[in-house]
Length: 258
Image (cartoon, rainbow, N blue to C red):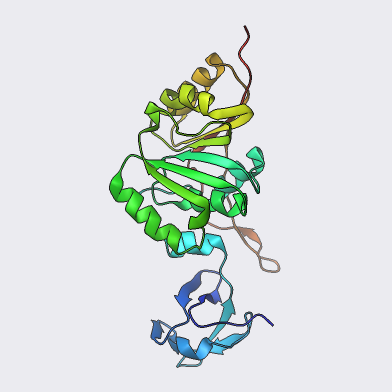
């Protein structure tokens, strides 16, 4: 049976709107529904229920990577949300052994998703031009146990990537079209180019530049996420949804005609 060990992170689930990411240590965790002595959770099976000081029931769940990113990461910049990260992973086929360059690391949210899927033999090379964000990303990523698969670099990729024959290049930059020639040089033949941008004007420039530079299989996609309230006789979409976060451009490297 999988049980909580000392130092483990636990997702304390209250209901569909409220859950808390805590560490099983010798401290007291206070909520609006009473407090819990976290040390008493050690040895409890995941999936079991515990009661707070006022008798409210919480369920002990093992947190997913998504929980760490949304609840634990410090986020001074806008992150790539799980819905967009999922699209990146499925459209590119990123998996174990992939070598990926990511430019615009920010808080490290997408870096974490990429590193999780390239394990155990792949690597993510994360480029960022702000030293303060490198420090924040390193602190965030160290909580996930994924740093063995990540190399963070303080460098402007408009000067080029250090790596060659990459499986994918993923950009989250204000002017991704300026980096397309460098991405082309860094990718292996048939490698995947990805760009995340918040405005359609950026998409236009990125697609036109990629097309002119010889990339093929170019697609521009937006992913919307709508949750549902599900109850017999009352099922309907939730009033609030995660709408526009950004646009994704995907393309593949082809050999230039001679």
